[in-house]
Image (cartoon, rainbow, N blue to C red; front, side):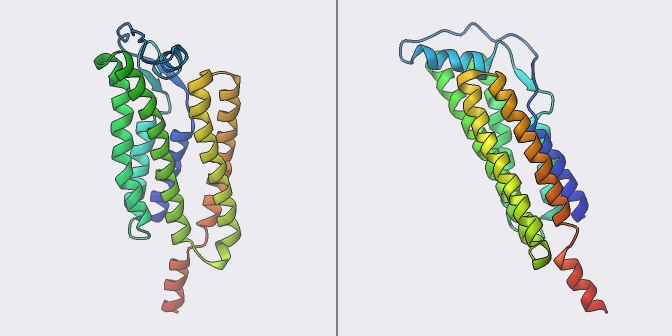
Length: 216
């Protein structure tokens, strides 16, 4: 059960870390600009966050959230942090879908402010989900034998989360430019390091070791 949960979480984390979006579906209605907001802000939201039609990530965040939800469900007995991660997943899912629908339902400042705000909130919730996942893993593997690998895992997570926060800022101001691609690569490498250290950390399970000692 533990390994199944961990692997589901790993798959989910990779889905959240890789962003290769392609436009699919019906074109959005023409977007009207307003004098209530600055032209640069409106242009950035339209061109960098909305696009001409729904942008669907090949490694879809919704799929990643589903993997994380069920992976956490396998591990809730090991730490309450996994419960918190599970409870946050529906909020991120609803906002993710909501953002894709908004250009069909709103115009002008109602559209631009909500899309920009929700886009940043989704990233924040994803960071919090992965924070509680890491806290849960640290709690369930906490022992002197895992201390070094656990510290390395947390360093990898910090790099991933810093890049995740930077990427939404870069995307808003510059779109999918060279800087965005460079930071995406850094985040992917950091994710691989994080997962490698995670797998190393769970090799020694304090609870299983305790049970084995009691049965001897």
